[in-house]
Length: 183
Image 1 (cartoon, one colour):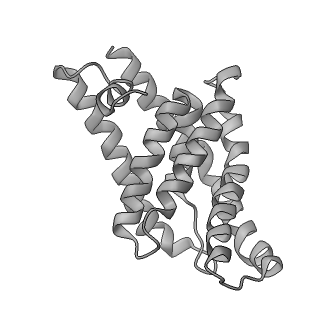
Image 2 (cartoon, rainbow, N blue to C red):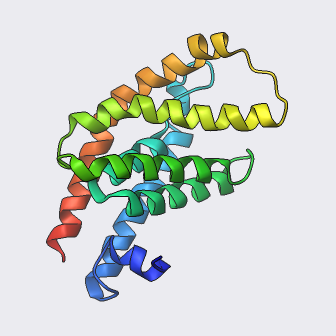
């Protein structure tokens, strides 16, 4: 198993002058998307659900950089969300790391620069995310009406995911290309 320094090195050059800039850009992208998700996208939410940009970022990074970087980015996105939201601490981190692993493993045999695949994969990623959350809530003996959830919560959120998946993936692709040019 690699240590944290090796994981960070996949996002940038070994800690030299340009590496801090690349890491700063990836961090800025993560924080900017989270700020948009928690501020601006709440105005276009449907019944309290809006697009999950952290999930879209994790899927895109996992497709472009593989499962190890997908897990790492999912961890960072989940920790950011868990630390600032008043939900169960660690649930978003576990969910995003799992999604980073699953979609990163699928990216091994795929053409990584394809833009349509992460857009289509945003729906299964959302389904996995909600399945993890609902499974956790069932373990806590919470009652959830799955039919109502699918009709009123999942599908509106899935449509918003589809709308924002392509712009988010293009943004991640450009930052990925910029990172590769600096190596």
